[in-house]
Image (cartoon, rainbow, N blue to C red; front, side, top):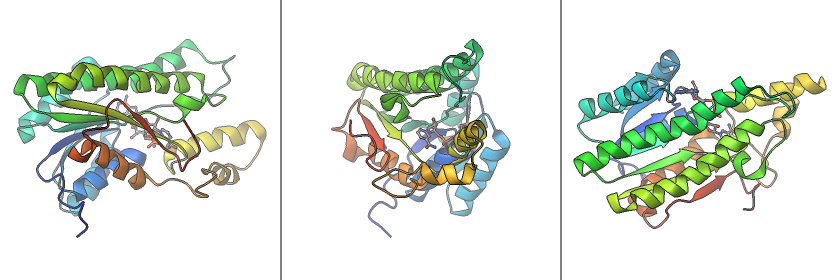
Length: 263
Ligand SMILES: NC(=O)c1ccc[n+]([C@@H]2O[C@H](COP(=O)([O-])OP(=O)(O)OC[C@H]3O[C@@H](n4cnc5c(N)ncnc54)[C@H](O)[C@@H]3O)[C@@H](O)[C@H]2O)c1
């Protein structure tokens, strides 16, 4: 047993976008440390696969099929979590969407979708969770999954970059507003994480340049690290930010990209 195992025993944490990729990695790490989890994803069927993995390892899970951009669905998911577990200690806003395309061609519908999932969804989930925590006098922490794209501004993802920069800004605001309630808010900015989203990005670029998606994926590794970041590595940093050890870190957006982004 490592010193981290059991550090979240009985804590109740909601993870959005937990069906696959980084969300699944975060859920696995938190469950291994004793957290009871509510897995929220628009893809309920695949989220059940994550739940199965967590339960097989001895974790307690509630799976909730919900779209984080829909206020009513968000309210129902938070109420369902509190009804099931009787408390709420943390939230990880990980659900995200990307639509690749040059800024000259991006449609209003693509902008709207990415804004609604990445930024509005993060706000709606955070607001509902904070309201429940404040109502019951529970202290807790929120970690938002932004992106190094929100700092760097990569080409062909203008709306995605802008929404992730918005998450970085929202993180600062919510940390400042909710400090008096004992709610800590931070963000992580991953980059080059081996997930279906990164595979989709590699395929999109490959199609445009008539290249090979696997080769391109291999090139999309953080330079200093020399390999992709793995979802559970993001999960361990998220776990730290959710923990009492991170009380002194507030409103920050921490890069998890193997050193690619120096600011
Ligand atoms: N993979 C990377 O390199 C990388 C880098 C930086 C940031 N991120 C961010 O990390 C997060 C997870 O990314 P990933 O790579 O695992 O992506 P992914 O596409 O593999 O997984 C995203 C998950 O979010 C869910 N989701 C999408 N829209 C939703 C909605 N409206 N409501 C609820 N769930 C919804 C999907 O069903 C899916 O399970 C995202 O916010 C993404 O922007 C990823």
